[in-house]
Structures are given as C-alpha cells and as structure tokens.
Image (cartoon, rainbow, N blue to C red; front, side, top):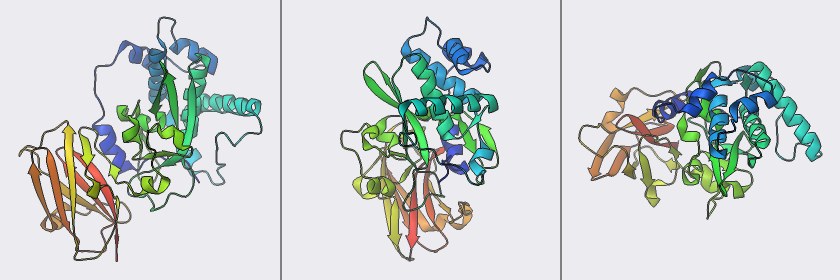
Amino acid sequence: MKYLLTIFQILLFHSAFAQTKHISKIDQHAALTGYYSLDSLHDKLALRSYSDSEKVRSFFYWITQHISYDIAEYNKSGYVELKYPEMADSIEVNKLFQNDYAAYVLKRKKAICAGYAILFKLLCDRSKIECAIVHGYGKSGTTSTTQIVDVNHAWNAVKLNGRWHLLDVCWASGHCDNKVTRFTRKLNEYYYFTPPNLLIYDHYPSDIRWTILEKPLSKTEFENLPLLLARKNKVNFDSGSLNGILNIHVGDTVKFNLELLSGNVATGRYIPCIDEFDGRGNRIPRSKTLAGQTFQKDGNKLTYTYHIRSKKVSWLFLAYGSEYLAGYRLQID
C-alpha cells in the first residue's frame, strides 16, 4: 500500500487557515539554511544556544521548507512498502537503512511520508532528543474508504520535558493535487504538536499507545469518525454526530449538531452551508443543493439539517464562515 498524502481539496482548506504568526528567529534561521549532509545539517540547525524545543522547531521548519513531496516515488510501480519497526532484521541494520534513506532524501530534496519521518527522527537523534517514527493509518479526504486495511502513513512523536508530542512533517509541508501529479508547498501549522484528541480524527497508529490518549479508540471507531476539517475554529461534536459513515436512503433527513468552542462566533454575517461531493471527490454546484438543507444556531451551537435527494452524493461537508468544519460519508441504498 502506498503511503498517503491528503487529498487536494481537503488540504487546501487545512493549509489556507493554518496559523500565520510572524516568523520567529528560529524559523528564519532554518529557512535560510541550505542543503548539507545529515550531520552537517544537524549542526547548522541545532545551534548551541537553542533549547531542545527550539531544536525540534528548527528541524521541523527546515524540512517543511526544503523537502518536497516525492510525486515520482509515490506513483512508482512496484513501490516497496516501508514498515517500522518490523522492516529490519536488527537494530543496526535498521539504523543503516534509515541513514541511507535520509541521505537519499537530502540528495533528491524530495520524500514520501516515510522519508519525512525518518529525516526528522535522525535529526532529533543527533541532538539526543527522544523521537519515534509512528506508522499507521492516515484518513484522507473524499477518497477515504470505509475500511482502511493497510498501513499507509508515517509520522512522528517527540519527547520534550517528559511529555510526548505528535507531529506530521509531511502533511505540514503542503499538498498535492487530486491525482498526485503536482505538489504545492504550503506550511500547515496544524500538524505541529497537534493535540492527540484532534490528531486521532485522521491519524491512527498501529500501536495504540501512540494515540497518547487516556482512552484509545479502536480502529473501527477511528474509521467511523467524521473528517475533522476545522482549523480556524475548534469544534465539538455531540454524540449523535460522531458517526462519520451514514447508511441512509433517498428521502431520509439527517441532522448534525456541532458546537464552536473557539474561533468564529456563530453570528449572522457567516453563511452556513452543506456542500455535496460525488464519489470522485468533485463538488456538486451549490445552486443545485441549497434547497435540501436548513440551518439553525443557538449561541455557538450549530444544527445542520440535510434531506437526501440523490444517490449521486457520496460526501457532505459542513461549511461555516470561511472553512469546512466536518465531512461525512454517505452510503445510500
């Protein structure tokens, strides 16, 4: 199974509303640092005056600004699946492979998700910062299947001040078009130290300990979660809106209840809407869909009501203000 990069339309919303803070001195230094061998790159990025957390930020930012997604590697026929930690016969063989692969990434200035994760880990290793490569299941946009059978993604966990943090350098670096033929670099801060209760909506580790949740979800529960698309707002789902895969019939009416916890308040100047997508991930023009939906708000509590009118609709995305909040898959009989 090829490692996954999120679908273009979804990441466009993710990246467009990422944090836009003034660039720090650490980011400036990383952005201006060129390409070197792994050891030299580490020494250039991990200045002695930096704390461990600053070094981690430097490694993260450099990779997002200098490594592009490897379209050719993703689309290569006969692609060899990478697995961690089962892939190697010994720890030493695994270390040799990772160092060779990181050198390969730096030479080509490109990587798939495994390459991003390996490079980040090896930079942390050289600063004696505890870091792990997490492999598991990434849930993308409208190409998601009901059941994600194979491991298809890799990301990282890094330990600072006795606490583990999750980050995905690959998904933070940018996005590809629908057919994975073109990569657009666009920093997405959402995937830097993402809270575990949010990352679980689209990342599920093979080893559930890496959910870093007190009560880890099962893989089936993960697969059934809606797509959490909100980046500008923090959203809470009521229990009736946590099922992201809806088995319904033409003529049925469904309701979604969400609450905005921060970000935009539910004011009249925002026009809520439900966008429909077909099975290929193409959005159906809104002019044809508005009649089948209504919207209510009570403070920051939002209720979307949608009437099923056609079997052609495979996905519903709940829009509010300047972003999508959540996505639901329809299985219409």
